[in-house]
Structures are given as structure tokens and as C-alpha cells.
View 1 (cartoon, rainbow, N blue to C red):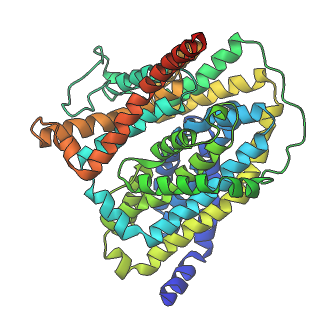
View 2 (view 1 turned 180 degrees about the vertical axis):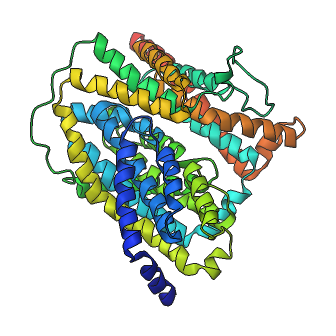
View 3 (view 1 turned 30 degrees about the vertical axis):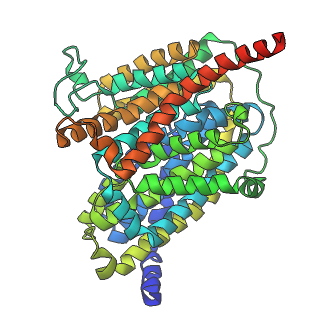
Length: 503
């Protein structure tokens, strides 16, 4: 093992690997911080570059860019309430509320610190728990995936600051949007209205950009400018992070565990990890009433979770060639292209390469702290610029990014349409984050449900017969009934109070 570790250090100590990691890190930070350009897109755009690199340097670019992009999506979320990536959407409102309270440094510092800690925890899971975690993932059938995806959807009711009923309504709007197109189990065009552009469905990224970025610009146009934030020197980014680590050590640990477990499940990824962890943080918090007002607790747990899922998503990828998420799917293609074919033999025949991947993940997450702080300080100048200067630039980035997604004008139209939808929903108290969650998770829910019904010949009993499926079903149904129970309790409690006072 010591010889293998020494060989791994030798592999990553070349100038090619070092330069590739630094360049990919800066690239990932920039792409992740631009609304509409997700971590997946950042990774995909690197694939042509990997043709000209050695195998280890090629993997280094994927590892560094994906880790940095997931974190840097937090930066515009905290400064402008416009999440850079879908994983950041879960807690963008919370981080922005902290910025309005004058705690931008604390919010962004928590993002970079706990993302790095979560990333390293994910690497440790990749090193130590790869075989057992992969076996657990492989034991999941479509029945378990249905309940897991449904449980993820139910997080919308737990994170909503407004009425849970409105959150569910927003989620159903997202599910309806996810039904558009022919990418369904039956391959039948749905809600396309004869438009060929809708055959491919609505991608989550344009919807995300529209409801957060364009809707934010519309609000800025129609509302008076809020009082400017105090023009003060941006303080220490890392100040207070050790105190938060000690104060919320259990939340950080729970976020790491949830991120590792969700990351290893094929198709789940950082988006679901962030939503589930933020919902759990609010559900089990001693101060749930502070969530949504600028409370750092949810940022700690969700920030640790989404980066932990990035590394653990490589577990089934390396062992069985089954991608844990879209980033891991791209990485599998690069591995095959470079002769590092995924499989159990990869850990024996090319063990030094595997240890090199572990070390690159650790180095990337360590580099995230100084590079992330530098990126935050550069981005912090956004707070000093007037709204009239920032909003046109945001609209330009939205238009360019949405055009780049599909290389056609339909993406721009989609972003504009969802901007209007997002504005109308928020104006009436419907959380747009719940709709985005429905769009992201809708396809997974439908495919798992239909496939399960085909396997069971139309019977619903297998959805509850398997032990893990039964546990997930109980959790999902409990989350679904939770708003109803809360509503009943609020109706019954005042009646009991009035009855008690009249006696």
C-alpha cells in the first residue's frame, strides 16, 4: 500500500497535472458562478481538452472543475439571490437573507469551508467505503428509486417558508413542466402543441435561470431599489468558521453522511443531496423559525452535503461503470477514453491511478479554500455596484448562457417565459424553488414509477414489500401528510384554547 501511495504521488507531481488542476479550478470557479452555466456544463466543455492530456491530468481537470463549480454556485446565490447551479438553489434565499443582514462574509465563508470539508469527507468515503456503498446502491431497484425521488420532492414542503399547500402546488407545476416532450417511458409527445422545439422537453437549467435570474431582474425593474448595503471593507471570509464547525458539528456530520449516501445512488447527485440536507436541517433544527430569515445552520448542512456527493458519486462509477450523476457519467467517458476502464480490476491492476484520483480530490478541496476566498473577494465588488449597472449584465449572461445550452433561440425564449412565471408565482406567495425541484426530479419519479409498474405487472404491492422500499415509503408518505397534520393542529389548537378559557 505504501508503494502504491508513493507511485500515486509521483503520478500527480508532474507539472502537467499541477497546471491542469490549477487551470481547471479557476475555470470551474468562473463557470459555476455564472447563472445558467452548471457544473455539468463546465465538466462537459472540458472533454475536448482532455484529448490532449495524459490520463491522470485529464481526470485531474474533471475532478478540480466539478468540485469548484459546485461551490462557486453559492456566490451569486448569496450576493444576488441567483444560484449559479441547481445544487445552490436549495439555500440561495437563506444566503441572500444573510447578505441583506450584513453577514455576507459568514454566508460565503460557510459555503467555501463546509464545501471543502464535505468534499474531503466524500473522498474518505470513496477510499474506505467504496465496495459496501456500491453494493447498497446496486441493491436499489426502481421501487426504491421511486420512493427516494418522491421523498426528494416532498422536501419542497419542508423547506417552504410560505404555506406548505402553496409549496406543493408549486411542485406540481414543476412536475407538469417535466412531462413536456417525448422523453417519457411511452415515447409519446406530450404538451408539445405541435412545436418541434418542445419535443426534447424543458431542461432544468433554463428554467432555473428564468425563475431566479430573470424574475429577479423583473422585480428590480418594478420595485424601488432597497437601501444599499453599508459600504464597508469586506471582512475576513473565514472568521467564525471554526466556531460554526464546533456549534454545528452534528449538522455538518449529518450533511456529510446524507451527501455520501445520496451521491452513491445512480442519478441522484448534488442537487438532491442539497435539497434533502437543507430540509432535514430545518426539520430537526432547534430554531426552525429562523430558517429563511438568514440563518447559517441550513448552509452548513447543505453545503457539506452537496460537495460530499460529488466524490461519493464516483464510487459506482469506478467499481461498476454506473454513473452516480451526470458529472460522473462524463468522467466515465474520459476514463474509457484514457484506458482506465471502470471495474473491480481497476483497483488491483491500476491501484496507483486510483490512489492518484483520491489524492487529486483531496488536493482540489484544499485548493478550494484559498481560490474560493479569492473568487469571493472579486465577486464582492458586485455589492458596491448600482442595480442599474448589474441587472443588464445579468440579463446578457442569461441570454448568452441559455443560447449556449441548445445553440438555438428557443433556450432564450424558455428563460424569458420562466422569468415571467417565476415573477408571478413569487408575487402570489408560491415558492419557485419548489417548482424547480419538481422539474429536476419529475423525470426520475415518472420513469421509476412506470418501470416499477411494468415489472410488477401493474401491482402496487412490490412498492411496499421490499424492506428498504417500505422504509422510504413511510418517510415519503409521512412528509406528504406533514402539511395536513400541521394544518389540522393549527385549527384544533385555537379551538381547544378557546374552549379552555370559557370554562
